[in-house]
Image (cartoon, rainbow, N blue to C red; front, side, top):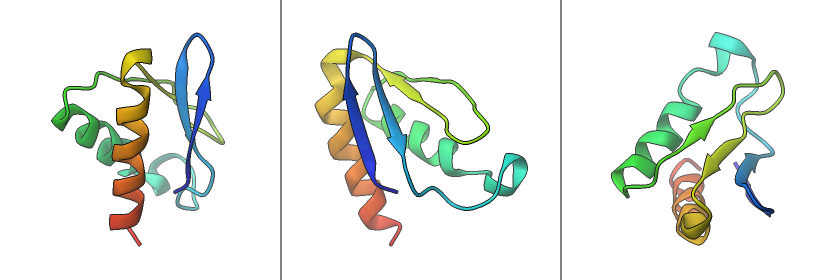
Length: 77
């Protein structure tokens, strides 16, 4: 996972190299991300897509979110 921030009006994060598979084959990635963000009191809005799942977070928590996602990415190596 390599989190990237899109700093527009709505902040979302993409993971460019998520686990291969689709649908139920890739179960767990979004749960791991949203649970970790929940642990840091960051609310999320996930939009499930076929090739990517944008995760919307409060703009004021964008930097915190990126730090947490990079930590999660390092832990998963």
